[in-house]
Image 1 (cartoon, rainbow, N blue to C red):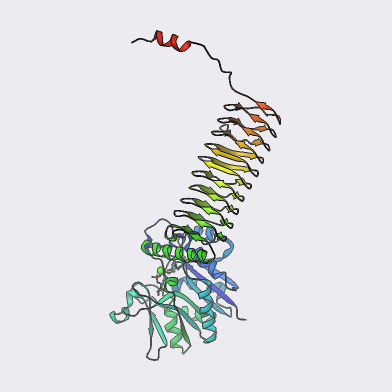
Image 2: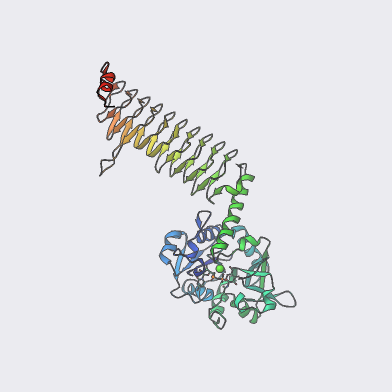
Length: 459
Ligand code: UD1
Ligand code: CA
């Protein structure tokens, strides 16, 4: 099999975005555009993936990490010049090179595979991924000769009126015979309206050498959407959202209103999960069968068990078991882990805390830096006092303990198995198991005192 390489162009600043964030790092459905591109490329069998970085090089490298090798384009002199930066790594290699722009987030691995298959079956030296655009403005147009063969690509700004009427556009994705690509790039000039070295000029050069040039037209224009400004970004968001949501629905997930449901590309959702409007599901979240989410919940990097319900709540970086009830208005902060049949009710905040099976904090509590056993009942208004101004300390509540309402548990402290804490207690010493701890001043009733008070009152 021929070797395959990929070059991702991601060095531009993206002036038209008018942003301090570099263009290819703008997220679509929560994932930076360039990461979408690289993830799709990685579904192909590649020997080498190289990203050309320039503006924001460090940030792009931070994002992609080990998913790519990098070359720096110091000055952004055009897409042809950008590819040429990979010359040292690729020029002497035999094989096929795919070139993709970092600003086409909707491109799929499937389409890339079809492009490669087409390239191979046509025995072409260059194959352009093209699409039919209703509104081709801004894209390079594909110029075909009398015989229908691709001759060259002309950029919007260089196109004659007649050429501007052409609706077949260059998606900015190509595959090339690697050695020929790098040879041809050396002959690309910057003699055009923008004074840039255009990668698409390679097509005309190879054509002039009598090589076979081919085009594969994808039926999905949406895949080729290039994001140059925030209007296009919102279009990409909408299309990606539709793609993701439809896939979940086809897999057996009910989305009450898919227009108002925001699911990231790396979220996994089981069958018969129901998601109400206004939910944002992000990162590597996994939701198991028969769970119910929303309305208006934001869940980031969580594992949610089967039949769990999360209503109008926020959860991040946590594991939540089966048949758990969360919300309304609960906040599960990072590094929390809730067992099965747990309840975290309204206005309860949980942070870096583990709850064993069947434990409950139903109302108005803060449980942070805590290990809560199973079958524990945490009364309304209970607070783990975890912070002394400098350090955080652990609260341990053992199995089957009962914490009365409005208690403060001053950490580090342990409430033993099966113990009771009386309502309103401020606990700063360990409570032995099976004990009752009352830590509040005794109530004194002064009989008849009210009338005495009233008689001394001035009119
Ligand atoms: C490019 C194509 C156009 C195609 C369109 C598809 C060229 C000259 N034109 O136009 O035919 O229809 O994509 O979306 O290639 N970049 C660099 N270094 C540079 C310049 C650009 O790395 O010196 C990167 C950018 O970061 C971007 C990509 O290349 O990710 C494309 O550049 P952009 O300026 O957006 O090209 P378009 O004008 O959209
Ligand atoms: Ca572009």
